[in-house]
Image (cartoon, rainbow, N blue to C red; front, side, top):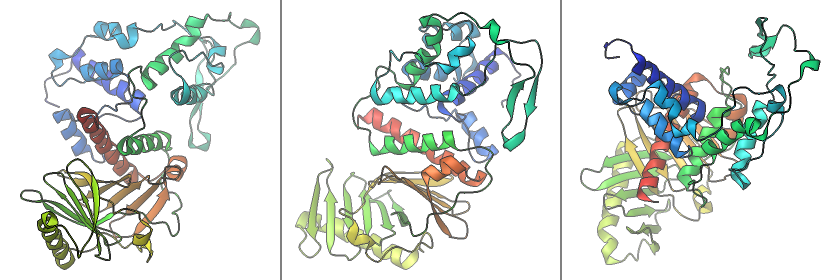
Length: 414
């Protein structure tokens, strides 16, 4: 990109991109537009998911270092602990891909992730090395490599040792379930990240249209917002007409749709509930600011999409969703709500993406297009049936934002 020629350092950088894509499921700098992808490459702006092992994270960071002189050589890459600390066999016997190896490094829920990967690998028809060429069968839009002649059954190789056929499983185990991986309950941010990452990994790349929309399904989302963070904070209105403010001192204020209930979260996150007509004196100033924000949004801003909310939607909520965090870029504003919801508003075409996992067993994706038309999809349907390129690019943008939010929480110890 800097027109400085090509060298081995550029090859190492390319291998870093390949390694990232193989472990994460998508390229490190990928965006919805080529120009933005180039900008991210120039800024070296990418996020490594915390689910990767520490050796994997270190090696990727080294190979993608912005300074070519600081990148490792090919020999140093091979000597890195990611490769050197595991036994990698010279070759694999045919039966190896159809037989599960012991999962010494994994147990419980984490081992299931490795088993899923191994189960997928076991479906591949791998044959011993042959001299005859391969042909491609393009049926069903899924090219598959097929040998012209299968290897004779009489030439089966000896049963490999435990170390040999366990090498791949051991490598997968170290990547998918590193020893230092947290065993505690996942945060809502990590839940969203895992769900979206799994969805994009499973989504068929050949799909050209979105799945069938879910009828009558709605999720809470931000319909109006105002950025006054240079002085007070960030105000917003939700689809059920409740309003809230995330103040610069990290306190949060929420007002119910019927304007009778106030919820206040102090700097420690402690929640207190008040009647709007009997508010403590120390909250009066914040209440005045919230009412100012609400009045401004009512008078000057339009709704963020044509979505019909049930009349009793606000009554069903136990608590008013509050703004967990938000970030504004040149291309979009990303907002995370307390109800396990991430929303991305894209500035150029005014499309909106809302991912809601409040019901962990059935996460929902709400997409509002350029014509303000809203459609809700089950995330599982998107993973199974795929989606068009426009929606896929926006999902990848959302995943990147979630990855950065996860890193923020890890640094803060949240």
